[in-house]
Image 1 (cartoon, rainbow, N blue to C red):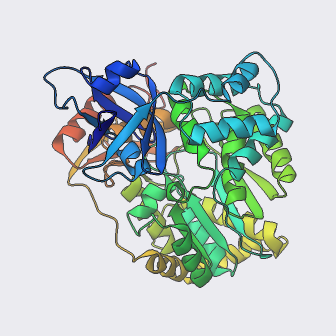
Image 2: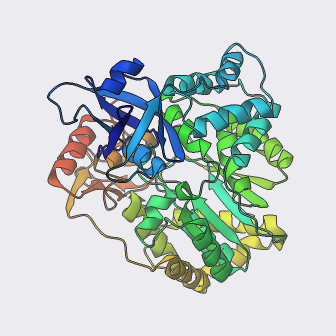
Length: 500
């Protein structure tokens, strides 16, 4: 078959972007006029995908009669060893005109957004086109009606969960605050109170840990929809990774482009959060908005604007939504990184004497607010505290872990070193963004036990040479890499009297 090429796995992870590799002397590549970064349609049996071409030079690892596929492309085609596929130019994406219209300031309706979402999921849009769409929607360029339309288009494009006429609770934190791992505690309390709370969470993209990363150090999180439903029907709640459930699947594609651009878009954030909540079948949703100088939301005004948009879009989607504006001045708990944050969660659930008090109080506040949103009518905070202090929340958490595949204790890193105070003083500030970067350089979240353990809190008096935080890594190289950055930074933890 001269018009086809043998498929081979490339062994290259390109995240969610399908990529195909062809030899520069490949006859198909030459005949079709394919060049690097060309969008190519690949047909295999009754399946097809659109992938981006990378060209491999002479003398390299790929034969001229082969096409190598990235992990995501191989999985999407369900390719097997020995398969041969056909390659052609795809039709231009119909939604490209919608993106151009939005870029020139026109308003889009739900049909326009639905077309963009559909082409995104079919990989018909290049990263340049997706970046143009994200840019055209950035800042205040999505009004309320457009945000509602985009949210509905994103929700409708994926799987949805239906729990009948029962109240379904959920919570979400907009992020930007290291260590703020309240979700496992809140889920345990709410499920122990007898409510449904099927919590789907993300893995970290730019932070040292996501809820799914932290939970994965204690129990399996990669459940499909059927397994999720079994867990929730048995225990009332779950804490699973949402990436395998196809709930608002276009969101992951948009996030992949948004993160490097570092755009602050209220409309896109609201669509991202609420499309997933609605797809998960939530009826009552609590949104936590930490506000602080180095958090994602940095001012009361920004929090108010975000809260107003969340409330209006939530109402349009039929959600009973409440806002919880919290203190985002400093990291929460002691751990920053998946396993270290899991240890904090377990300490709170187990009522350990040294459990971080700030994490406990935040979790109780959120659980209480969520119970009040359901029907506790002002009694939620007291009920939440009783369920935590009695051990009912711990028992429920362990039951959820067992139902998801079994509980395990989080691991600990072998490589550790203290970062000490350069002089005596009082701790007055913590730069959440830079402390998170240090944890990431140590290996978090990929290395589950890597990260930072904070040893002092804002307001503490410290002596010269006293340890401020402990750096954890799984290898000496990662420890040295993070240490070099930590030692090059001043003001990550600010002590009174410190020279500017």
